[in-house]
Image 1 (cartoon, rainbow, N blue to C red):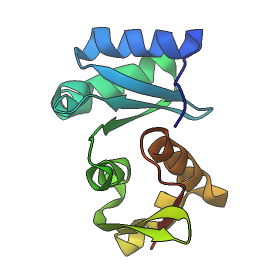
Image 2 (image 1 turned 90 degrees about the vertical axis):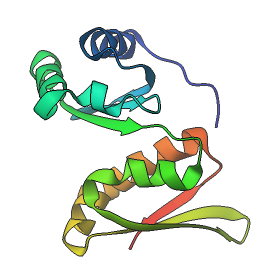
Image 3 (image 1 turned 180 degrees about the vertical axis):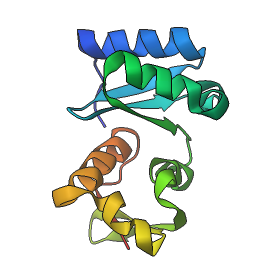
Image 4 (image 1 turned 120 degrees about the vertical axis):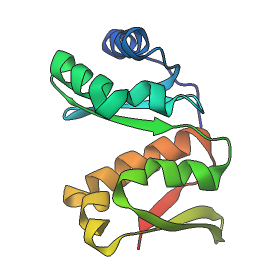
Length: 141
């Protein structure tokens, strides 16, 4: 949970997102295939827009998929928000030895997508969660 810094592309994405949506961005993670925006609590509807219009417009402009995650200061709620698109059924956070671990139960048909090809989504989501909370490992069950 170190300091978060942004490069010029990420700053451009944040500016574009905030200008288009009027939602407040807390964090932005730019990946090869998508840009993930962590937005302030209560701004999710503003961020997405009617029928997802803001997300679709941003996707058109930056030529990458857009994912919006609402921040929450409660670790359980935040983990749920991170995995929201995969039909979260439950989240448990527990100590495993000296490591804090989150188990996320999603809809069975969404498990593969939540984990991603070669575990890519799971790694990205774990890193996002770890930016804010002392949770070092995450599994999808």
